[in-house]
Image 1 (tube, rainbow, N blue to C red):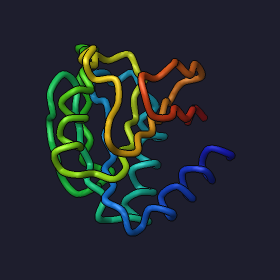
Image 2 (cartoon, rainbow, N blue to C red):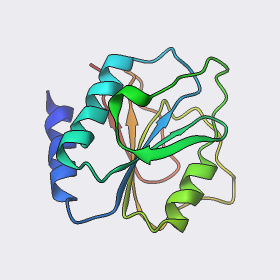
Image 3 (cartoon, one colour):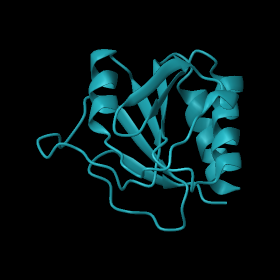
Length: 137
């Protein structure tokens, strides 16, 4: 229950910030119930959160809603477009639910916003920047 409380307080602390939640949809081999619960948490606590669904391209940008997520099976993910979008939109905090196996341009070694990688796996990989939080159940 530790990570749940942490995410809860992180959302609450950012009520006056521009927040986005990105989901890596490159595979359907993910704990969808866990991801949907996190999305519902954002939907309930911070309904003005923007939800980005992306794999190797951005599939959708919409208000946060748990029942709209569509997963694919190709396994190809790139984070660059989402990170560039967040920069252009002047996002204060980006939460990204992913296994952190996707591609990032080598030149991109930092971002100018707060970044949290929410990893739904027992293995917590090294992230290129920002902070990784294990959300495995």
